[in-house]
Image (cartoon, rainbow, N blue to C red; front, side, top):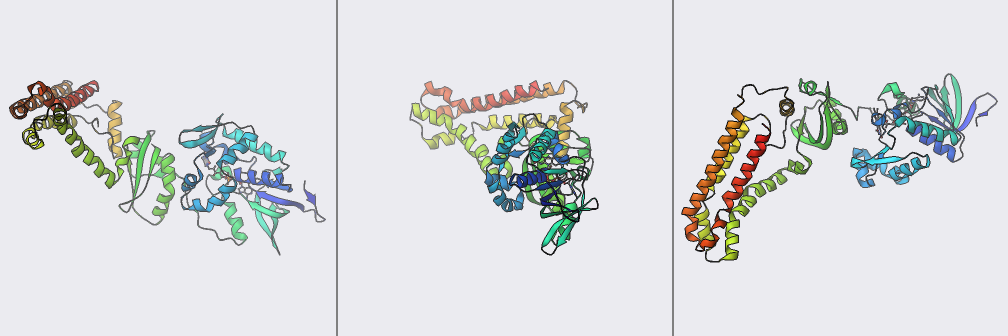
Length: 449
Ligand SMILES: Cc1cc2nc3c(=O)[nH]c(=O)nc-3n(C[C@H](O)[C@H](O)[C@H](O)COP(=O)(O)OP(=O)(O)OC[C@H]3O[C@@H](n4cnc5c(N)ncnc54)[C@H](O)[C@@H]3O)c2cc1C
């Protein structure tokens, strides 16, 4: 309850300026501790921004453990640790449960209200604040802090003075002014002697040059990796969802990278983004070291394993051939099948603009082409209708020829040194495995014609 002094100045113990989520929590907690509290909100109702959060669904928090949670706040994360030790996501969830708000946890640990209704969260908070005994005054824009000998003694609002022992500023940032956050808090804090660090956008979509983004407008990508190069050097990257808009790029990973990009732009640096469509399970390809490991597996270990398989099987059943004899005679046996398989693959690849053989693309124009071809908004009119099938048949003949050539080579060379003729079929495993894999891939390709 407000008290009236002799000069008819209302006096509270706590004044909270701004009725966003921060102000509602601060006012409710202060009143819960027994302080006479007033909440002053500039707009006609509190929590305007909260009402539109998470596209109206309100992404309340995340269940990630504290060490992981703070990393998402960049270098400010360490500063927040102490506060999070006092009140963390689990406390918020328990607090909301007390307000009868059911929650659901979605992919990535994101927590939403079960009814996906952000305005209902605002209502629940406002009801709680009022139950705590807070006087909520809307349409009450605070114009000025009032200073006394011992510090801030109150505020001026609508031409009137309100006094309090404590004044809490929770006026939000300067983004989305229509919701009431017009940056008043910075001016008020500066008037009380605080140093204000220049503000800049932190979670914003990005405008891009050229017309690629507008042409891809509406295309939403999941499980992509975005890499940010600043003056040509890779500086930041993130993995997740993004989308193309009429002006550029948006979506969760773009927003989370935007703060660093904005900082670099202010320093007049040259920024380039590369979008890697690698699937999640392939995303480890990113670094030099992992690229090397992958190459060793693909080009040394795997062929080496296939190459040595017949020898190992043969030695298990008979032991009359040495490794050096096997190496000498078997060395050339696989050249025909490997050469023919790769030739067939190259023919199919150059004959199609659909990136069938590549799991990932690194440039948006490639993505655009692939999407448009699949949606048939771009038709490959230069190819006569019979050509893909003819190419597939040609590739099949090449692969079969390579398989047969390998088998003949094995018969003429390796089979001579293997003494046990009953085990002859083992020799042909390699052309069979290689040829088989490529013939299956050819069938898959034909299904996409
Ligand atoms: C589109 C959008 C979607 C978002 N989605 C999410 C989400 O899903 N999850 C999430 O965690 N965060 C989300 N956010 C961020 C989140 O909304 C803010 O972090 C949060 O609202 C900040 O709370 P606040 O109380 O500090 O400030 P605000 O919510 O901005 O509240 C500040 C209040 O102070 C009032 N005020 C300002 N000046 C004065 C004054 N002089 N006198 C009196 N009152 C004043 C304003 O009217 C306002 O009501 C989103 C933000 C936007 C813009």
